[in-house]
Image 1: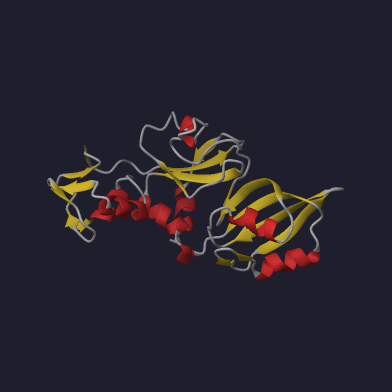
Image 2: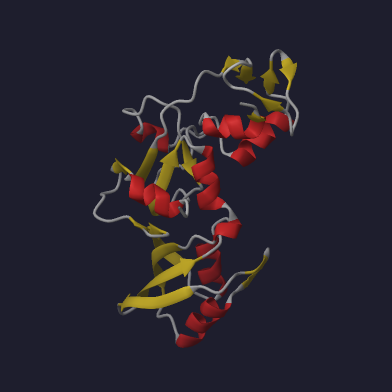
Amino acid sequence: MEQRIQKILAQMGIASRRKAEELIIEGRVTVNGKIATLGMKADPAKDHIKADGRLLVKPEPKIYLVFNKPVGVVTSLSDPEGRPTIKDFLKGIKYRVFPVGRLDYDSEGLLLITNDGDFAHCVLHPSKKIPKTYVIKVKGIVDEDAMQRLRRGVRLEDGLTAPAKVKKVRLSESNSWVEITIYEGRKRQVRRMLEKVGYPVIKLRRIAIGSLKLGDLRPGEMRRLTQEEIKRLMGK
């Protein structure tokens, strides 16, 4: 059965659909020896499809992992600076996988890892508006005015953020812990929002994506998602 090349690549765990489109545009995908173009269709059961010169075989089993990323780990499979990456924690996984979105080097918490490009697309696409919840320690005692600004939306250099859910978790003499839920995925968005309202982030941990909770996973630990968890994240 013929399908668009980018969908085939996503189903085979080569990359998300968006990244697969980039591979095609860059001329890194061929079908029966000819360079693929966007919109081209192929039959993975009959056609010889290569990505970066590697022949694609039948789809690998789908892998869905939830990982508690520690601080000081890069959300990628390699790092030119030689820093630890999530690949260091994937030595028991024999199939090629990739992170769904990212967490900053100095952030920790829930990170999804998969080889299913359609699943990654469902989780990341802005139209899905899947909430992401963080617990953050900030410098200073957060006042009500800042809380209301976060709830209404904060104007950043790349535009106004969507309204967020925010609540105080606990206070100390000089710091605050707040929980914030956002429905977007801009780069370093939560940190930039809090800095904009005057409260630099000291510590940030993602504790939930949609209905999926981090639970009692310790930093560096991972587990496989259940079928029910996968269906809920994909809106099925």
